[in-house]
Amino acid sequence: MPSSCRIAIVGGGLAGLAVAHALRTFGIKTEVFEVAPALGEIGAAVNVSPQAVKALQAIDLGDKIAAVATTSPGIYTRNMQTGEFLEFNDRRKNAARYGAPYYTFHRADLLDTLASGLDGSAIHLGHRLIGLEERADGTILAFANGARVEAEIVIGADGVRSVVRQALYGNDNPSYTGQMVWRALLKGADVPQDVLEPTGHIQWVGPGCHLLAYYIRGEALVNIVTQEDTDKWVEEGWSTRGDPDEMRASFPNPEPRLEKLLSLVTECSKWGLFTRPLTQNWGRGRIELIGDAAHAMRRAAALLLQCALQAHARQRRAERIDRCRRTQRPR
Image (cartoon, rainbow, N blue to C red; front, side, top):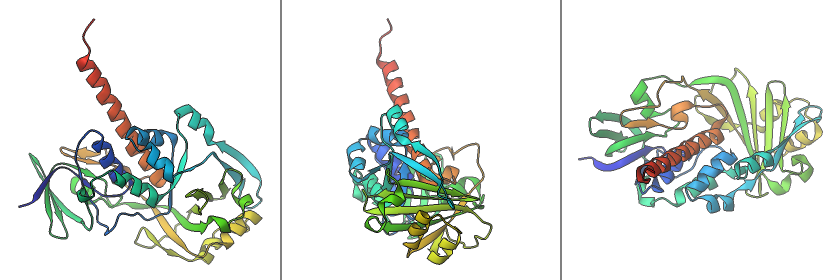
């Protein structure tokens, strides 16, 4: 006999854990099923906009995320080869507008924070979903380890290669976008302060590519992430260890500060950007999709997390309005 739960969330990444925590604020219990043997996610850092920070605050995570976040006042943009100043994006304006800061996080810290308020026994690691059986009163989930779970509602947060999505819509396989990223982490103490500008956040732009560098964990680490147009991505996996010299060669004739930053890279990874066809619906019956499983995006997890959190915030406002209407007496 399969075990049972009210809501099963397939995927323990940012979107899945955010939804689990959000539902917890309504007193709704969930069970999270994650394929990995430990919570974690490929990638080093994530940017979270003021709108998403407000949503995190709304599910009682404001103090916890502030403790592990680095505030980003704004981004300087320069020409990749000449170093010419192009613009300054003052993020404090949006912070004032929305009443919340713009944060950067180490991805592992944000995941830990999202998981911290959940019942550890409700997070099931090493569970790779291999099939779904839809029924009138629920869904049976089958996992590679032999476990079977019956859930009233299933939320697919299992990424761009979503098994939940495949069960709903068939093999609409993700396709390579023609863009890839390089990622690297440096010790903050190794990076000269003038490289990252006064705000600790800089972007260099050039033909068909750009590179971002910014502090996370206070100033303990510097995250480097690039994006470039290329048709040479052939690896099957989403991420593979890269060659620092190959990474540097992707940015010919860099201006001196960018050259210095790239010279410090000793380890890096490649990341192909993939997308998949949009569908008219992000679910069917008792099954819903969220995050990459619903709408793989090129600008990665920060936007996906924002979408997940803002969706919850909108739902919460709707619940409050409905409750108010039901309890107000006509005048």
